[in-house]
Image (tube, rainbow, N blue to C red; front, side):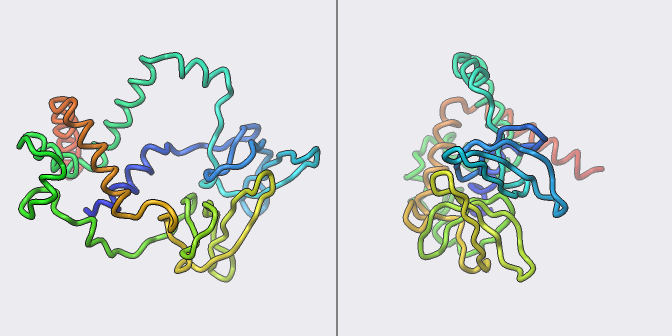
Length: 236
């Protein structure tokens, strides 16, 4: 599996799915004001309300483009609990390993060999190889993704397709909601003015390498559990 695809899957896992309900406080994934969820309209879109300069605003969103906002009291309690934070990190690592055990096994082999990530990538015969730089797969746009215009733009959240098969994208400029329409070929999930795909892939690989190097036996156990689970599923 290519590193860019691995990174996308990792981000999808870390960004846990939000179940939207009436009365929730939510925000567009790419940012913006806090909004109150009202109800669904006839098009199965969530109606959300917020105020801008004492003027009530209304927007219509798919569930995939919204994320819930915990209240400040809950956030403060969570931030004060080091144990809860550590457990959350471990849970995220377990989810990542379970989703892509082969990738973590490859990095674990590098750690076991006593190599740095750079040393491994410089050696063509190593387990990681150089697949990120040869990554040419076509990007696939989905609801809830963060995208940019190929020529540069604000970060936008993908909503849905319209009757012309164009992607409807939302973003906020201060408290004002903007809605634009693009064909899939115009959009990219990589910020043209930010890090390149290769840089982003490398950053993700380095983070995983450091985590595994810090506790290789724990990751070895997680990989074994993930592989056993997959084997059990294949037998069913």
